[in-house]
Image 1: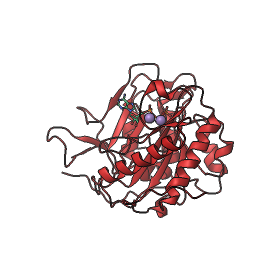
Image 2: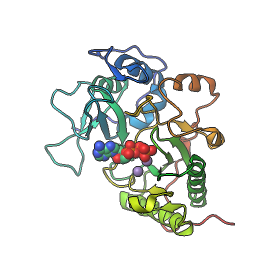
Image 3: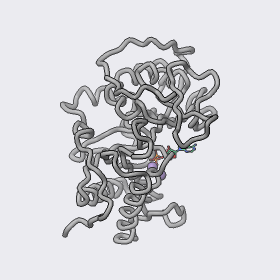
Length: 307
Ligand code: ATP
Ligand code: MN
Ligand code: MN
């Protein structure tokens, strides 16, 4: 049976009801982040992260012994899974396999209990599996690409999206690059969204072949930025805004405003250690208008910016 798909209501502060075993287990030794402090982090950012992870298929990077131990990327439910994690039925999937979902803060705490150190949602919600409500352009800098060039690339992606009537938002990946994320009215199917994003990446690569590539080819990437559009196909995932990364320093994928982007010092600047202070200091959510900015993807044209 499909999960209840009514929208979750983020609560301001919620007490933890999910039992954490081994709360003192250290997940990020260099940053001193324990399982319990991860739970505290997610409880604090719950209202921000909820719209991006509730009621959509999730892949998890699980690291039961922390970032220095074994890790596995998990797309399906498992035996003995925490009771607050949901099994989702992919309408096009195998009858015997279920995808992973959550519906509330307890579900997120279930993920913490399961040592999910990264949360990677689909670009579509369970309300309509076949119509993405997000487009992600993943900017992957090759060796020797200055950070400022990654920022400039994100701005160019934004400008081109804007010429097609789409509103773009940006976040650090918490790894090496930036993600430009576009809220979509879920009207077009995966094929159209993928074709649209590929066309955009290829246009940029063909206009600036010295700066961008649109296909994964390590040899060609040296000194260039890969415009990775392949997040935009059915079953593909990207790390959620506010998700932690299983990398040194406990970085998080952080939404930022276009205005502040030039002052962002790098892709892993934001961590579990500085996020709450950042959010408290901001007057508004950096992605405040995200959900109000949904436009349908324009299927016919991919206009180049003027000038
Ligand atoms: P970076 O800025 O370093 O590129 P990223 O989040 O853009 O960070 P990765 O962490 O390299 O990129 O993840 C690449 C993609 O592959 C993500 O969309 C993720 O959902 C998926 N992924 C990550 N780890 C695995 C894995 N072990 N197996 C399969 N897919 C994975
Ligand atoms: Mn990337
Ligand atoms: Mn990539």
